[in-house]
Amino acid sequence: MAKSSDSPFPPALRADGVQVADLDTSATPGFDGDKATGAKRLVERQQVLSDLQEKLYANGRSGDPRSVLLVLQGMDTAGKGGIVRHVIGSVDPQGVDHAAFGVPTEEERRHHYLWRIERKLPRGGQIGVFDRSHYEDVLVVRVHELVPRQVWAARYDEINEFERGLVEAGTTLVKVAMFVSLDEQRKRLARRLDRPDKYWKFNPGDIDERAYWPAYQEAYQAVLDRTSTDHAPWYVVPADRKWYARLAVTELLIDALSGLELTWPAPAFDVEEQRRRLAES
Amino acid sequence: MAKSSDSPFPPALRADGVQVADLDTSATPGFDGDKATGAKRLVERQQVLSDLQEKLYANGRSGDPRSVLLVLQGMDTAGKGGIVRHVIGSVDPQGVDHAAFGVPTEEERRHHYLWRIERKLPRGGQIGVFDRSHYEDVLVVRVHELVPRQVWAARYDEINEFERGLVEAGTTLVKVAMFVSLDEQRKRLARRLDRPDKYWKFNPGDIDERAYWPAYQEAYQAVLDRTSTDHAPWYVVPADRKWYARLAVTELLIDALSGLELTWPAPAFDVEEQRRRLAES
Image 1: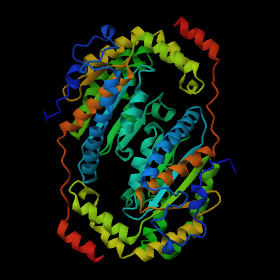
Image 2: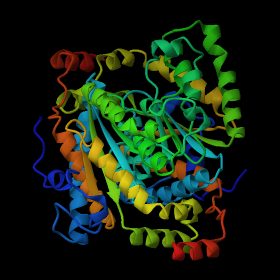
Image 3: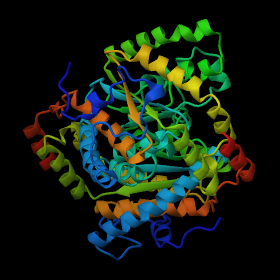
Image 4: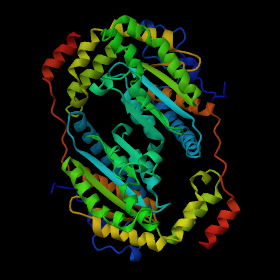
């Protein structure tokens, strides 16, 4: 394994042994500070992330095929959008390949479920961000039996193989499952109904989904049990505290990028010669 | 015309009558403050831009087809990347469709020059950002005679028609031509040769292009003269001062978004009914 950072977050968030139904969604594993300390730390760490991202991008421009792919999963209101805005928003947009996967379009449904995923994979040098992902095909699809059991049941192994291929091609996966409590979700949905500038985030279907909470917990448990692999482990982020979730995902990305041991690319030209040419131009 | 903001920038930057060869690239039209004042103003205006962008995004999610497309053109080192990083970087990445157009790939060369452009147009609710664009097909292509004269000469009218179609479909174009002086470009290229963490940004071909400076000025002049239309005007941004260029583009985007007179989307549901359902869930 490549050397990674010394952050306490990755080990504290590893999915191994996690029981979704028993998870304390208000916990702050790996961090013992409060909200104010966490917010201050976030700003400092965003700079570290941004510097690492620039190095990744620089190497990509120089032909390095490596990339990082952040996979975000979580129930409605878990804060996936906030991660994109406040964590990914701190790095250069040129280096970000963002994709949100909603209900499949008609065209997408005519293809294998990994087709739309493959089309959005990050290029070398980029941080890819998936707001929802191929895991929807073993989450909502399983909970609502959108395909027969034997179809979705075969997907766990298929996903593991698919991700192994990505890793072998140079992509470091950072798979993050964000969990809020049923109660915290109610509060967040209520807030969307209290503010006219938040109505657009509300979907009546989100309330229907609450009735399936235990089924989703089971489906998430199966995801963690069956697709947290050595090559692409899952991280479980308690997300009742938004400030914590943002800090945690920042740390996970820093860890992934540190593991690449990036250096600035060597020049593909003679620096002295170019200086002379420039002076004469 | 829709109502727009009261900023002095858009009128000061309109391309009408601009002579590229005579342009003062160190000027700060529309702003009489210094660098420190400009940097402070930028932070304030980024928040305004970010709020407007969220409204655009909210409307897009509710089916509004309107979008904004920022087209960035400029010689190497003009600061296009800095605009993406420091202006676009201040808004939510979920609402940004970014595309950089380099030397066409083999596949792109087999298609009409607008083919790759059409594939990257912003979706409704998004701010699209083109780092270089279809204008390369009347700039580098004209300067280096990559196609016969009659071919590129026909493109100005074609581009105007193409852009008219975009505007009719709901896209507000913000076309920005950034200009640095030949001397400022030398300084910026020299800086890339002085810092090992900047080597990756340097391309020996950038020096070759300096010999074509007058031809590029002519080609830019033709772009401004022939493609600055009522439906899609060009703005000319003097870019020797990076802080100014960033502030200017921020103001142009704010103006474009203000012109859409966006309001928060009305709820597509009965708020009281949803509150009841949520309380029971």
